[in-house]
Length: 392
View 1 (cartoon, rainbow, N blue to C red):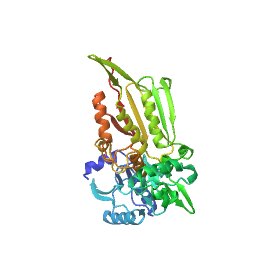
View 2: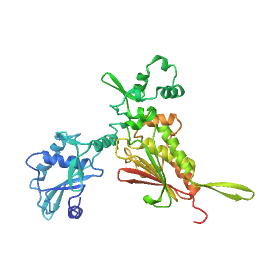
View 3: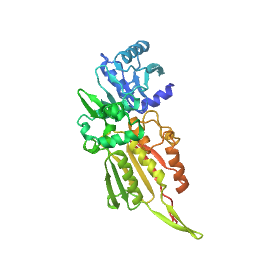
Protein backbone atom coordinates (compact mmCIF):
# COMPACT_ATOMS: atom_id res chain seq x y z
CA UNK A 1 0.00 0.00 0.00
CA UNK A 2 1.35 3.40 -0.98
CA UNK A 3 1.31 6.42 1.33
CA UNK A 4 -1.24 8.25 -0.84
CA UNK A 5 -3.52 5.21 -0.80
CA UNK A 6 -3.35 4.97 3.00
CA UNK A 7 -3.96 8.70 3.43
CA UNK A 8 -7.08 8.42 1.26
CA UNK A 9 -8.26 5.52 3.42
CA UNK A 10 -7.66 7.52 6.61
CA UNK A 11 -9.41 10.55 5.15
CA UNK A 12 -12.56 8.47 4.75
CA UNK A 13 -12.69 7.89 8.50
CA UNK A 14 -13.76 4.75 10.30
CA UNK A 15 -16.29 2.78 8.30
CA UNK A 16 -17.76 -0.69 8.10
CA UNK A 17 -14.43 -1.96 6.74
CA UNK A 18 -11.91 0.37 8.42
CA UNK A 19 -10.95 0.61 12.12
CA UNK A 20 -8.33 2.98 13.63
CA UNK A 21 -6.27 2.18 16.74
CA UNK A 22 -3.54 4.34 18.23
CA UNK A 23 -1.88 1.26 19.71
CA UNK A 24 -2.66 -2.27 20.83
CA UNK A 25 -4.53 -2.17 24.11
CA UNK A 26 -3.23 -3.47 27.42
CA UNK A 27 -5.13 -6.73 26.83
CA UNK A 28 -5.94 -8.72 23.69
CA UNK A 29 -9.73 -8.88 24.03
CA UNK A 30 -10.64 -5.51 22.51
CA UNK A 31 -8.37 -6.00 19.49
CA UNK A 32 -9.65 -9.55 19.02
CA UNK A 33 -13.20 -8.16 19.00
CA UNK A 34 -12.24 -5.61 16.33
CA UNK A 35 -10.60 -8.22 14.11
CA UNK A 36 -13.47 -10.64 14.52
CA UNK A 37 -16.02 -8.00 13.48
CA UNK A 38 -13.97 -7.00 10.44
CA UNK A 39 -13.42 -10.61 9.36
CA UNK A 40 -17.15 -11.39 9.47
CA UNK A 41 -17.95 -8.62 6.99
CA UNK A 42 -18.80 -9.17 3.33
CA UNK A 43 -15.72 -7.23 2.17
CA UNK A 44 -12.07 -7.22 3.30
CA UNK A 45 -11.50 -5.09 6.39
CA UNK A 46 -8.49 -3.06 7.53
CA UNK A 47 -7.28 -2.57 11.11
CA UNK A 48 -4.95 0.46 10.98
CA UNK A 49 -2.64 0.78 13.98
CA UNK A 50 -0.88 4.08 14.60
CA UNK A 51 -3.88 6.30 13.77
CA UNK A 52 -6.06 8.04 16.36
CA UNK A 53 -9.86 7.99 16.27
CA UNK A 54 -9.89 11.47 14.71
CA UNK A 55 -7.60 10.32 11.89
CA UNK A 56 -4.39 11.86 13.25
CA UNK A 57 -1.32 9.77 12.35
CA UNK A 58 0.65 9.00 15.54
CA UNK A 59 2.69 6.06 14.23
CA UNK A 60 3.82 2.76 15.74
CA UNK A 61 7.02 2.76 17.78
CA UNK A 62 8.09 -0.85 17.18
CA UNK A 63 6.12 -2.05 14.16
CA UNK A 64 7.83 -5.46 13.89
CA UNK A 65 7.10 -6.23 17.54
CA UNK A 66 3.49 -5.05 17.22
CA UNK A 67 3.03 -7.15 14.09
CA UNK A 68 4.23 -10.23 15.96
CA UNK A 69 1.84 -9.52 18.83
CA UNK A 70 -1.01 -9.04 16.41
CA UNK A 71 -0.17 -12.26 14.52
CA UNK A 72 -0.13 -14.20 17.81
CA UNK A 73 -3.49 -12.70 18.74
CA UNK A 74 -4.99 -13.68 15.35
CA UNK A 75 -3.73 -17.22 15.82
CA UNK A 76 -4.66 -17.74 19.48
CA UNK A 77 -7.64 -15.50 20.22
CA UNK A 78 -9.83 -16.09 17.15
CA UNK A 79 -11.60 -19.23 15.94
CA UNK A 80 -10.78 -20.18 13.25
CA UNK A 81 -7.43 -18.37 13.22
CA UNK A 82 -7.09 -15.35 10.94
CA UNK A 83 -4.11 -14.67 8.69
CA UNK A 84 -4.06 -10.93 7.91
CA UNK A 85 -1.93 -9.26 5.28
CA UNK A 86 0.49 -6.96 7.19
CA UNK A 87 1.91 -3.81 5.63
CA UNK A 88 4.21 -1.15 7.11
CA UNK A 89 3.48 2.21 5.51
CA UNK A 90 5.54 5.35 6.12
CA UNK A 91 3.44 8.52 6.51
CA UNK A 92 5.33 11.76 7.13
CA UNK A 93 8.16 9.94 8.84
CA UNK A 94 5.82 7.81 11.00
CA UNK A 95 5.26 4.09 10.42
CA UNK A 96 1.67 2.88 10.35
CA UNK A 97 0.82 -0.84 10.54
CA UNK A 98 -2.08 -1.96 8.35
CA UNK A 99 -3.59 -5.41 8.93
CA UNK A 100 -5.97 -6.34 6.11
CA UNK A 101 -8.38 -9.14 7.00
CA UNK A 102 -10.02 -11.43 4.43
CA UNK A 103 -12.89 -13.42 5.95
CA UNK A 104 -12.54 -16.59 3.88
CA UNK A 105 -13.65 -18.93 6.69
CA UNK A 106 -16.60 -17.08 8.15
CA UNK A 107 -18.10 -17.01 10.66
CA UNK A 108 -15.32 -16.12 13.09
CA UNK A 109 -15.62 -15.86 16.85
CA UNK A 110 -13.34 -14.82 19.66
CA UNK A 111 -11.91 -17.36 22.09
CA UNK A 112 -14.58 -16.07 24.48
CA UNK A 113 -17.28 -17.38 22.16
CA UNK A 114 -18.43 -14.03 20.71
CA UNK A 115 -19.51 -13.77 17.07
CA UNK A 116 -19.19 -10.09 16.20
CA UNK A 117 -20.19 -8.03 13.18
CA UNK A 118 -19.23 -4.52 12.18
CA UNK A 119 -22.09 -2.12 11.49
CA UNK A 120 -21.00 1.31 10.33
CA UNK A 121 -18.05 2.31 12.48
CA UNK A 122 -19.09 0.20 15.47
CA UNK A 123 -19.41 -3.49 16.23
CA UNK A 124 -22.10 -5.65 17.80
CA UNK A 125 -22.89 -9.26 18.58
CA UNK A 126 -24.29 -11.19 15.63
CA UNK A 127 -27.84 -12.49 15.88
CA UNK A 128 -28.56 -16.20 15.70
CA UNK A 129 -29.91 -15.78 12.16
CA UNK A 130 -26.83 -13.85 10.99
CA UNK A 131 -24.53 -16.52 12.42
CA UNK A 132 -26.53 -19.30 10.76
CA UNK A 133 -26.38 -17.52 7.40
CA UNK A 134 -22.60 -17.27 7.58
CA UNK A 135 -22.36 -20.96 8.46
CA UNK A 136 -24.54 -21.69 5.43
CA UNK A 137 -22.36 -19.56 3.15
CA UNK A 138 -19.26 -21.40 4.33
CA UNK A 139 -20.90 -24.79 3.67
CA UNK A 140 -20.52 -25.78 7.33
CA UNK A 141 -24.29 -25.85 7.84
CA UNK A 142 -27.05 -27.01 5.52
CA UNK A 143 -30.14 -25.34 6.91
CA UNK A 144 -32.78 -27.47 5.21
CA UNK A 145 -31.42 -30.42 7.24
CA UNK A 146 -31.96 -28.62 10.56
CA UNK A 147 -34.43 -30.36 12.88
CA UNK A 148 -37.72 -28.65 13.71
CA UNK A 149 -37.68 -29.55 17.39
CA UNK A 150 -41.34 -28.77 18.07
CA UNK A 151 -42.63 -30.98 15.23
CA UNK A 152 -43.06 -34.76 15.14
CA UNK A 153 -43.45 -37.43 12.46
CA UNK A 154 -47.21 -37.16 12.99
CA UNK A 155 -46.93 -33.83 11.15
CA UNK A 156 -45.79 -35.63 7.95
CA UNK A 157 -48.03 -37.20 5.33
CA UNK A 158 -46.82 -40.81 5.34
CA UNK A 159 -48.89 -41.81 2.32
CA UNK A 160 -47.46 -38.97 0.24
CA UNK A 161 -43.92 -39.90 1.27
CA UNK A 162 -44.39 -43.60 0.45
CA UNK A 163 -45.95 -42.80 -2.92
CA UNK A 164 -42.97 -40.58 -3.71
CA UNK A 165 -40.53 -43.24 -2.54
CA UNK A 166 -42.13 -45.97 -4.68
CA UNK A 167 -41.83 -43.79 -7.75
CA UNK A 168 -38.22 -42.68 -7.33
CA UNK A 169 -36.47 -45.39 -5.26
CA UNK A 170 -36.54 -49.14 -4.72
CA UNK A 171 -40.08 -49.84 -3.40
CA UNK A 172 -38.90 -53.06 -1.71
CA UNK A 173 -37.09 -50.91 0.85
CA UNK A 174 -40.47 -49.85 2.22
CA UNK A 175 -40.85 -53.43 3.44
CA UNK A 176 -37.33 -53.84 4.81
CA UNK A 177 -36.73 -50.46 6.50
CA UNK A 178 -39.03 -48.49 8.74
CA UNK A 179 -40.30 -45.22 7.36
CA UNK A 180 -38.51 -43.48 10.24
CA UNK A 181 -35.21 -44.93 9.07
CA UNK A 182 -35.91 -44.00 5.45
CA UNK A 183 -36.67 -40.42 6.49
CA UNK A 184 -33.41 -40.24 8.45
CA UNK A 185 -31.43 -41.75 5.58
CA UNK A 186 -32.86 -39.15 3.19
CA UNK A 187 -32.12 -36.25 5.58
CA UNK A 188 -35.83 -35.58 5.98
CA UNK A 189 -35.67 -36.37 9.70
CA UNK A 190 -33.08 -36.77 12.43
CA UNK A 191 -32.87 -38.74 15.65
CA UNK A 192 -32.97 -36.43 18.65
CA UNK A 193 -32.49 -38.42 21.85
CA UNK A 194 -35.07 -41.18 21.66
CA UNK A 195 -37.28 -39.29 19.18
CA UNK A 196 -37.20 -39.01 15.39
CA UNK A 197 -38.18 -35.50 14.37
CA UNK A 198 -38.62 -33.96 10.90
CA UNK A 199 -36.15 -31.56 9.39
CA UNK A 200 -37.10 -28.34 7.64
CA UNK A 201 -36.85 -30.19 4.31
CA UNK A 202 -39.07 -33.00 5.62
CA UNK A 203 -41.82 -30.56 6.63
CA UNK A 204 -41.60 -28.50 3.45
CA UNK A 205 -41.75 -31.55 1.20
CA UNK A 206 -44.13 -33.86 3.06
CA UNK A 207 -45.70 -31.87 5.90
CA UNK A 208 -49.48 -31.82 6.36
CA UNK A 209 -49.25 -28.13 7.27
CA UNK A 210 -45.65 -26.84 6.99
CA UNK A 211 -46.60 -23.27 7.86
CA UNK A 212 -47.77 -24.38 11.31
CA UNK A 213 -44.07 -24.49 12.25
CA UNK A 214 -42.52 -22.49 9.38
CA UNK A 215 -44.96 -19.60 9.04
CA UNK A 216 -42.53 -17.61 6.88
CA UNK A 217 -42.17 -20.43 4.31
CA UNK A 218 -44.90 -19.11 2.04
CA UNK A 219 -45.42 -16.98 -1.05
CA UNK A 220 -47.19 -13.61 -1.04
CA UNK A 221 -48.42 -12.88 -4.57
CA UNK A 222 -49.79 -9.46 -5.52
CA UNK A 223 -51.10 -8.04 -8.79
CA UNK A 224 -50.89 -4.26 -9.31
CA UNK A 225 -52.93 -2.11 -11.67
CA UNK A 226 -50.00 -0.30 -13.26
CA UNK A 227 -46.21 -0.15 -13.04
CA UNK A 228 -46.02 1.08 -9.43
CA UNK A 229 -46.42 -0.67 -6.08
CA UNK A 230 -48.85 1.71 -4.43
CA UNK A 231 -51.29 0.12 -1.98
CA UNK A 232 -54.21 1.75 -3.80
CA UNK A 233 -53.12 0.02 -7.02
CA UNK A 234 -53.48 -3.53 -5.68
CA UNK A 235 -55.91 -5.54 -7.81
CA UNK A 236 -55.47 -8.92 -6.16
CA UNK A 237 -53.36 -10.51 -3.44
CA UNK A 238 -53.00 -14.12 -2.38
CA UNK A 239 -51.10 -15.99 0.32
CA UNK A 240 -49.83 -19.29 -1.06
CA UNK A 241 -49.07 -22.00 1.49
CA UNK A 242 -48.74 -25.77 1.76
CA UNK A 243 -46.01 -28.15 0.66
CA UNK A 244 -43.45 -26.86 -1.83
CA UNK A 245 -44.88 -28.69 -4.84
CA UNK A 246 -48.35 -27.28 -4.14
CA UNK A 247 -46.95 -23.79 -3.62
CA UNK A 248 -45.15 -23.93 -6.97
CA UNK A 249 -48.29 -25.14 -8.74
CA UNK A 250 -50.51 -22.52 -7.06
CA UNK A 251 -48.06 -19.74 -7.92
CA UNK A 252 -48.12 -20.90 -11.53
CA UNK A 253 -51.93 -20.80 -11.53
CA UNK A 254 -51.92 -17.32 -9.96
CA UNK A 255 -49.55 -15.98 -12.61
CA UNK A 256 -51.55 -17.62 -15.38
CA UNK A 257 -54.75 -15.97 -14.13
CA UNK A 258 -53.13 -12.56 -13.69
CA UNK A 259 -51.28 -12.19 -16.97
CA UNK A 260 -52.79 -11.73 -20.40
CA UNK A 261 -52.81 -13.55 -23.70
CA UNK A 262 -53.80 -11.41 -26.67
CA UNK A 263 -54.44 -12.58 -30.22
CA UNK A 264 -53.60 -11.24 -33.63
CA UNK A 265 -54.32 -12.45 -37.14
CA UNK A 266 -51.43 -13.74 -39.21
CA UNK A 267 -52.97 -14.13 -42.62
CA UNK A 268 -55.98 -16.40 -42.13
CA UNK A 269 -54.76 -17.72 -38.79
CA UNK A 270 -55.12 -16.29 -35.34
CA UNK A 271 -51.98 -16.44 -33.17
CA UNK A 272 -51.87 -16.12 -29.38
CA UNK A 273 -49.49 -13.52 -28.00
CA UNK A 274 -48.76 -14.17 -24.28
CA UNK A 275 -47.24 -11.44 -22.10
CA UNK A 276 -44.68 -13.88 -20.68
CA UNK A 277 -43.27 -17.26 -21.52
CA UNK A 278 -44.84 -19.69 -19.09
CA UNK A 279 -41.65 -21.75 -18.69
CA UNK A 280 -39.63 -18.64 -17.79
CA UNK A 281 -42.09 -17.73 -15.03
CA UNK A 282 -42.12 -21.28 -13.76
CA UNK A 283 -38.32 -21.33 -13.59
CA UNK A 284 -38.31 -18.14 -11.53
CA UNK A 285 -40.87 -19.54 -9.07
CA UNK A 286 -39.07 -22.86 -8.67
CA UNK A 287 -35.69 -21.20 -8.12
CA UNK A 288 -37.14 -18.87 -5.49
CA UNK A 289 -38.70 -21.77 -3.59
CA UNK A 290 -35.70 -24.11 -3.88
CA UNK A 291 -32.91 -21.63 -3.17
CA UNK A 292 -34.35 -19.13 -0.71
CA UNK A 293 -32.67 -18.82 2.68
CA UNK A 294 -34.95 -20.63 5.12
CA UNK A 295 -32.95 -19.35 8.09
CA UNK A 296 -34.50 -15.91 7.48
CA UNK A 297 -37.68 -16.10 9.52
CA UNK A 298 -38.84 -12.52 9.01
CA UNK A 299 -39.65 -12.62 5.31
CA UNK A 300 -41.48 -14.76 2.77
CA UNK A 301 -41.09 -15.08 -1.00
CA UNK A 302 -42.94 -12.25 -2.73
CA UNK A 303 -44.22 -12.13 -6.30
CA UNK A 304 -45.28 -8.74 -7.66
CA UNK A 305 -47.11 -8.68 -11.00
CA UNK A 306 -47.08 -5.22 -12.60
CA UNK A 307 -48.44 -4.08 -15.94
CA UNK A 308 -45.01 -4.31 -17.58
CA UNK A 309 -43.07 -6.84 -15.49
CA UNK A 310 -43.16 -9.52 -12.79
CA UNK A 311 -40.74 -9.35 -9.86
CA UNK A 312 -39.72 -12.35 -7.77
CA UNK A 313 -38.25 -11.44 -4.35
CA UNK A 314 -36.51 -14.31 -2.59
CA UNK A 315 -35.11 -13.95 0.97
CA UNK A 316 -31.37 -14.47 1.25
CA UNK A 317 -28.19 -13.52 -0.52
CA UNK A 318 -26.67 -15.84 -3.10
CA UNK A 319 -25.06 -18.93 -1.52
CA UNK A 320 -21.36 -19.66 -1.24
CA UNK A 321 -19.30 -18.22 -4.14
CA UNK A 322 -22.23 -17.64 -6.50
CA UNK A 323 -22.49 -14.11 -7.93
CA UNK A 324 -25.16 -12.30 -9.91
CA UNK A 325 -23.02 -12.70 -13.04
CA UNK A 326 -22.44 -16.42 -12.52
CA UNK A 327 -26.19 -16.99 -12.00
CA UNK A 328 -26.79 -15.77 -15.54
CA UNK A 329 -24.47 -18.40 -16.98
CA UNK A 330 -26.15 -21.23 -15.09
CA UNK A 331 -23.52 -21.68 -12.37
CA UNK A 332 -25.25 -22.50 -9.12
CA UNK A 333 -24.59 -23.83 -5.65
CA UNK A 334 -27.53 -25.32 -3.83
CA UNK A 335 -28.18 -23.79 -0.42
CA UNK A 336 -30.80 -26.49 0.24
CA UNK A 337 -29.50 -29.76 -1.22
CA UNK A 338 -32.30 -31.95 0.17
CA UNK A 339 -34.94 -29.68 -1.36
CA UNK A 340 -33.01 -29.51 -4.62
CA UNK A 341 -32.77 -33.31 -4.84
CA UNK A 342 -36.43 -33.97 -4.22
CA UNK A 343 -37.71 -31.14 -6.41
CA UNK A 344 -35.52 -32.54 -9.18
CA UNK A 345 -37.08 -35.98 -8.71
CA UNK A 346 -40.53 -34.39 -8.89
CA UNK A 347 -39.64 -32.78 -12.21
CA UNK A 348 -39.52 -29.17 -11.07
CA UNK A 349 -35.77 -28.68 -11.44
CA UNK A 350 -33.05 -29.60 -13.92
CA UNK A 351 -29.83 -31.26 -12.78
CA UNK A 352 -27.47 -29.61 -15.25
CA UNK A 353 -27.95 -25.93 -14.43
CA UNK A 354 -29.69 -24.86 -17.63
CA UNK A 355 -32.76 -23.35 -15.97
CA UNK A 356 -31.61 -19.72 -15.73
CA UNK A 357 -30.04 -19.61 -19.22
CA UNK A 358 -33.32 -21.04 -20.53
CA UNK A 359 -35.29 -18.37 -18.65
CA UNK A 360 -33.07 -15.70 -20.18
CA UNK A 361 -33.41 -17.04 -23.74
CA UNK A 362 -37.18 -17.53 -23.60
CA UNK A 363 -37.75 -14.07 -22.11
CA UNK A 364 -35.48 -12.40 -24.65
CA UNK A 365 -37.22 -14.13 -27.54
CA UNK A 366 -40.68 -13.12 -26.30
CA UNK A 367 -40.16 -9.59 -24.96
CA UNK A 368 -36.86 -8.50 -26.49
CA UNK A 369 -35.44 -7.99 -22.96
CA UNK A 370 -33.47 -10.29 -20.72
CA UNK A 371 -34.52 -10.75 -17.09
CA UNK A 372 -32.81 -8.52 -14.54
CA UNK A 373 -31.02 -10.10 -11.55
CA UNK A 374 -30.10 -8.08 -8.47
CA UNK A 375 -29.08 -8.39 -4.83
CA UNK A 376 -30.94 -5.86 -2.69
CA UNK A 377 -29.93 -6.10 0.96
CA UNK A 378 -30.68 -9.64 2.14
CA UNK A 379 -32.87 -10.42 -0.86
CA UNK A 380 -32.32 -11.77 -4.38
CA UNK A 381 -34.61 -10.33 -7.04
CA UNK A 382 -35.48 -11.49 -10.53
CA UNK A 383 -37.47 -9.26 -12.88
CA UNK A 384 -39.05 -10.67 -16.05
CA UNK A 385 -40.36 -8.12 -18.54
CA UNK A 386 -43.65 -8.37 -20.39
CA UNK A 387 -43.96 -8.47 -24.16
CA UNK A 388 -44.52 -4.87 -25.31
CA UNK A 389 -48.07 -4.17 -26.35
CA UNK A 390 -48.91 -2.82 -29.82
CA UNK A 391 -49.39 0.66 -28.40
CA UNK A 392 -45.98 0.80 -26.75
